[in-house]
Image (cartoon, rainbow, N blue to C red; front, side, top):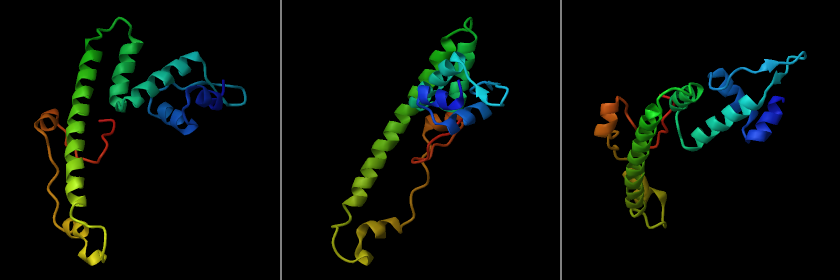
Length: 156
């Protein structure tokens, strides 16, 4: 099948498929005599797996680790359990950060009546003040990364 068919079948944009190929998540397809990419059921299954992982907000590195396990059926699945436990922990930390962010935004919103000139707006005045430094939770510091609220983690 051609890339457009794979895209339709997996509900994945063509550019994303090409990106996954460049990143090594999806193996390069064979080529037709006309140099068109030719995909098969292996690509459909692997891309579906990747898409499911992405729907769970997994990073490329997490997906690579799971794909490596998937590609080695004899491998110990304890690695998958650890990976999911770590990912779950990240999600729990992010939920805590988002709840804190919600409270900060509610407090900010309470500073303005919503009427009058913008020069008297409590929201704008508050935002002119220096903000707090990024929060580094103990878990994040131990894991060796800084999580800045509002910044989505990448494939670290």
